[in-house]
Length: 159
View 1: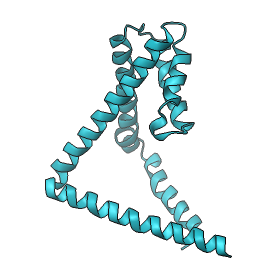
View 2: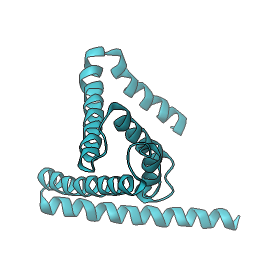
View 3: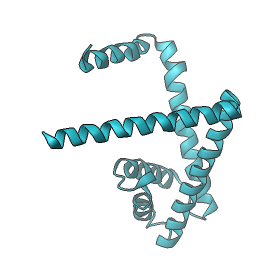
């Protein structure tokens, strides 16, 4: 089966939920809205922690800047890009050093929380030894895939 046919099949399967409004609202929209509300809340809490005025404008501006920085990332985790954009969007309400401190702290704490939460969740779902096995197998599979990609690149260059 070609890739195009596979993509079309996946789109049909995913789009089927749109034909069931209740299922879409509960299974997709509710989770998305909840996730977005939580993200806005996290931004508001961190802004307040750094004595940056919490308003609709600042929360939405920072959230938008974070979204843009994730799409324009040149570094892992958009480090640096996020801070620069946050400094720009917060320049009218706080100093550049305070905006940078806020941005770095938020990124570090949220990233650390994500790692801890992932470890706890993985341990809960798979057990500690099952989680370790899953991680080992994933790394091994990634290494195999990396070797295959390198071999393909070499073969293309050799042609």
